[in-house]
Image 1 (cartoon, rainbow, N blue to C red):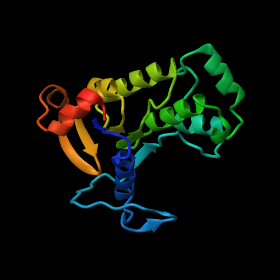
Image 2 (tube, rainbow, N blue to C red):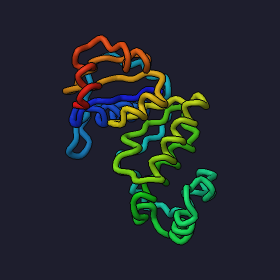
Image 3 (spheres, one colour):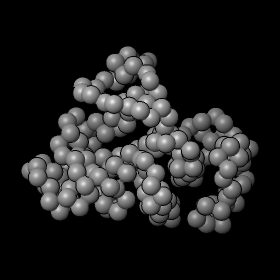
Length: 201
């Protein structure tokens, strides 16, 4: 598990999108709609499938019941009876119409249950209230313990420290430092890393 941290606008989410396209074998230097993704460097990609959680969740028009059935999910993973009842009532609705934070939690669950060899999570805890954030932190920890391969973009340093094998700092589109989790947090070498860990920006 690699956690990518860094200030807003440093290129973390863009890096995930590039990685997703590289895995899919898509040219990252080709503009798609009004967005052009590019990277400079060498990447040896041997994985050919990944599942990605976008920062604000999935806005699929597929029906909730169909998505749950396809992923082999029942309702037992939800943190409260109220959430289970709500999702059961919304089963015939498109995922895009499920209200937050239930939609984002369901989006996360669908990625976490994927059989893809690489999981990409973009800010999985972003603005999530309790008990959803605790649920997802626990699930990420379980994925790490299972040995799943994942890249997690997060501003949440306690999450990175708890679940990551390695942590990387991105700032201004540059890789500042990357190393084992304890080295990153306790023995970081770059002044920019130490400043980020102290001040968070």
